[in-house]
Image (tube, rainbow, N blue to C red):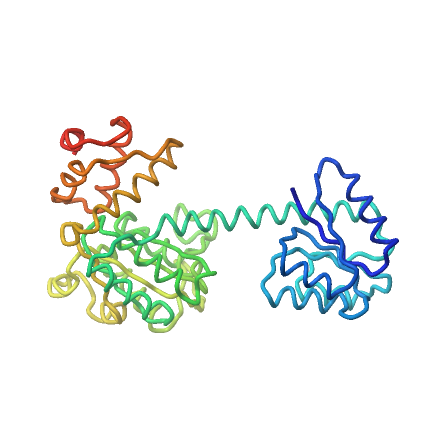
Length: 386
């Protein structure tokens, strides 16, 4: 049930507004009142309100100060300001301070109700977005208490707030993307985009267009202009996964982008300034690739300011129990089923396995076991479906 707070010093106006809101049966509103700014602040600090209708001119503390203090305290109530002496300047000031809308006294009934409904809809969208962000954060959560994982977390905490480029190494399926995500989430760029490019999955003839974009007509299939990943990641993070598979020609252009913070679209002539933070990952030994002439040494040194090595799962077997517990919950949520249990012998069988496919393989096996087993996953089922 949405809660609305009426902040108004005139009792007659409060009564009229309350009657209007109570008449909106379909909204099922719970309406509370505050006679002045001081009372309003006390209520806003002690209870949660979805929307507040707030008069601007009031004794003790005026509406603009109530709005300002509320925002400073991080209270999420949506404010709709009301004034008999409204001006464009006042409305602009209120909006800059975080008000959702500004209404003139006496407010037009239709305008008031439309504004209220829009504010409530906005709140729903904000809550859904926050829930989605929590789910995304949970999806990319790093699980494990082994010494190797604790060291990685320590490195992330130190490096994330900086602008340093990071090279993440480790075998396929070991969780390199999770490290990149954590570096992004804990950085000052967390509100910017996280743009991922799998360099191994893009044909060499298309990788430059993917990274730097292209102009219309620059090649046969270029029927319109395309913005590349470097531009898409502006003020965010660009994650170059499997960079060891990138062609030498593309490597040269990436090097220039890192040196000069400039790119040129395929078929274009104009330099474009870009400013993403670049993280890279590889399952290859890049020093060996350099020795064999397949990777540029100058690019390696640009990328490997900090190197984070992600171990294979067989090197951190003490984390398997925690990972299994997480995946049992994730799979149950994905399939809309009750979370299944796993007995000790079954878990020991998983811990004894070599896990050539690392965490990715473990996740797939857990999903298979959840689907194929009964309420509790047993040792014989593990051996059958591994």
